[in-house]
Image (cartoon, rainbow, N blue to C red; front, side, top):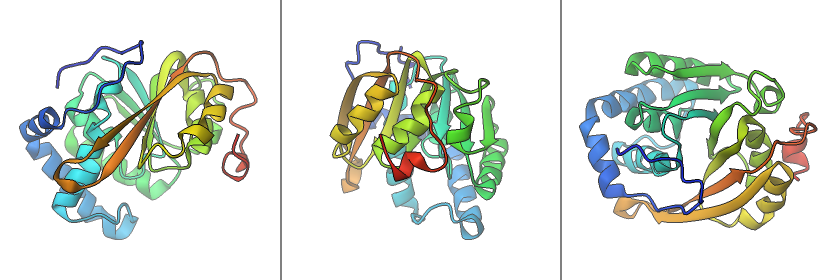
Length: 239
């Protein structure tokens, strides 16, 4: 994959799936090994309901790398709610210029992520077993990242409160969503949390595997100190 410079103008392009499939094919042994690990650990760690190989390729691998071009060259990336490592691990398999901090609150999933990172030989990927609403207040992690990403974690307004504190001013928040339906209700939260321009990019996964959306928010200024609120308020009472 061509290493795309950070697009600060927020003119966001749709994913080029022909190019992405070619990049995955060049690293097919690594993606195959990741698939094997996912299936092997899924029975005991409940990582995904999607296990058929073609579905995993399209709905997990291709969907994950659909947003890879939105991350800055050489960037330091945080992922909130890593789960089975989507979208972070497929992106890292294509983008060895990036470093990642994967934030996951479930210990068993962290154990899987550590195994996957080790087995795939991925450098610059750090696994942190913590709750995002707590880690986002830690000065060692708060506003330290060029971009923060998340997929299938929470509704956008709640997700923004978990994620935006990690991004630097001038950075980005990228959310993988099924549609842009949450965008309007999430705009207020993004603005309160330091967000600026917010755009959405719709796309169709190849092979008829469905429509998806990337929501991309610019981090214009620091997140106010009272956020994230913690104690479940992000979900119970979204901004």
